[in-house]
Image (cartoon, rainbow, N blue to C red; front, side):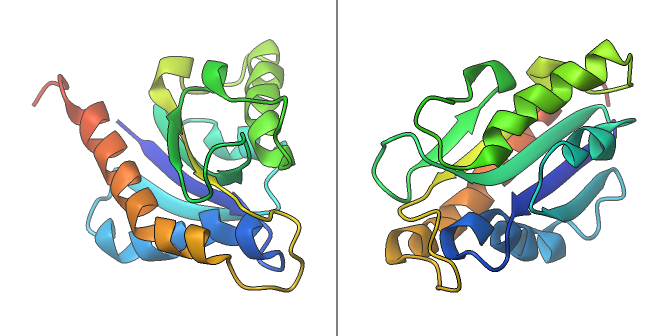
Length: 159
């Protein structure tokens, strides 16, 4: 089973780059797993669909805004991604990208094999600033959420 773990974000915009930071933390932890590719995609967008082609499973890490307390970690499927209050285009584009890819008959993971680890951002538009404190504090919890999601994927797989 090939798994893609990808962080989205703009490295120039504080909280919006938190997905990239989580991926930095994950790379050494997953370096000995040839079945898992750990990567980043600056600014995300519809290119995400192209990156997911040929993988059996995917975990996407991104900053989102739903109105929850800053630093909250969300584990969502593509169907459960909130769009009404989101200030980040990335989480909207995950569902959109998957829809476009499936219409084009691309070889993409099924919806139940995709998870979004969303880190609730406090200020997703703080250009040139560091992460806000709540988002900075959430990075280790987001790393654990990705590792837990990978473990959950592994349950029930044939040995």
